[in-house]
Length: 627
Image 1 (cartoon, rainbow, N blue to C red):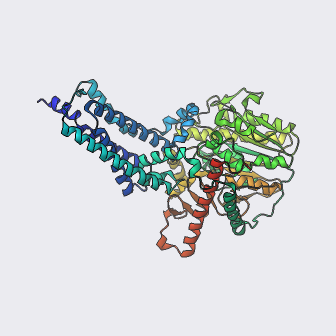
Image 2 (cartoon, rainbow, N blue to C red; image 1 turned 60 degrees about the vertical axis):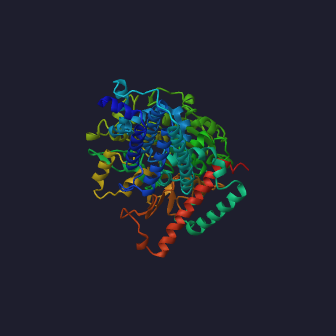
Image 3 (cartoon, rainbow, N blue to C red; image 1 turned 45 degrees about the vertical axis):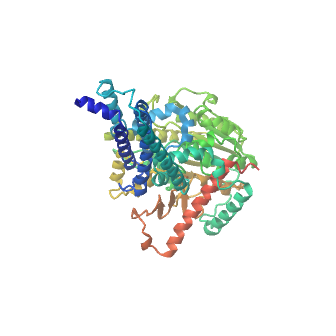
């Protein structure tokens, strides 16, 4: 038998399945090390669980006849490799695992594709290298898929036994690892660690079909009882007024400006001698700076809007706007409508994007303005009306409104991929990013600089029309713009702080710009953690509005922690990301080194976070505020 015949025989035997199984195991290890590995270490349960699933694959494919076995083996290899590649790419982009629920986001394919090149690395070809080699060998006739195979009773029985073993192991895996995933319903990293990437995706598919049943609260009465207990606890612990300004904005005009992708780290920073955000810097210096505003989820602009207007957590990646838009919420526009404010929402994009037209047209606003209602459409940046064009026309609309008015305007020019395509006058970008030119990070800095320029135009237009002095203005970034571990970002941050820790980098990912102008209130800097859920109750406090349901708290009270919808917790001193960290030290906290009082405090933070998420998700999934 020639060498070629030996190779071909091995290729058509069970050996190829075992080899592919080993390769798939190594691909999984490569995936884990590039995503969920903690300090370059993998959990034993993740490795063992992956071995179990590989055994299932090997057993089930080995039980097939020859031709079907080889073809199925190659198809399964490709599908699992593709899944790992997609999971890896999405994790780099959002620091989270992808869910089957996000298949609805394919309608935003153009936006997704524009970001894809930024999150793919050459190393990811390893997911497909074996498939490429096998296909080359098949085309070159080194391997040949044989149609026939000697059949006998022993082989037939062996196949049945192998299939039974595979099915039994699969049932065991599903039961064990789905139960593991249920223990951490909001943290996908921990779901993967405890259940493997296979167990996570099986759980995710089941969970998406049984969401309503899995929500903790099925009825309003049970939910509201726990909500009231939580709010009473917060009122007792955090309700004292740090700033006695209740009702200071009653009857005043109110504007919320949401800036696309503007993170906190660009504020008051220079590059090559020029400030990145000179207008925002001046606004913060003259007014109130919230230096610890955190996004509420690792996801989308729509999620930021949802949290701001409802004061509950979003379902990840726009699901609140796309899947649950018919729900009833105690929204911020309802509060202002009850006080006879003229309410409006403005965005320089199509109303169909993130289903915004359906969302906002249900909320009883006096004016909902998308790009088709703006007369001047002379400049588009990356598919959206430029911030400058939107702001100038927004001011004219506000000037025509009956006062007092409340308006929410969303800017979009600093949207990924940050190339400012369509900007007619590049001199409006006033910085030189130097060595970062033509990098994703450099493009981001330039787009942030343009967004700041346009914000300066907004302020000047408000002053010109006499609307600035007596109007409250809250401005904030919606979410992160850069991936967590962007190399150039870390290089930039290290120029500011040589001792930057991994915890600092993770927190930098969640922090967004935030400033608040309250007429006749002195400038100050507030460093306690806040997030978008706090905006609605803050305006209720400042404008004497009746707020019947908000999971957030007044930003001027003393609550010292916020949560994200993936079980992360940020306090003034501690950070929870699967375990507790000391922010100042940048190191995990050892339970042996802290006193009982601190342990109790950290446990309360965690339990309060879980209660908030249970209430929020139950409201979304079961529409519990419809009464």
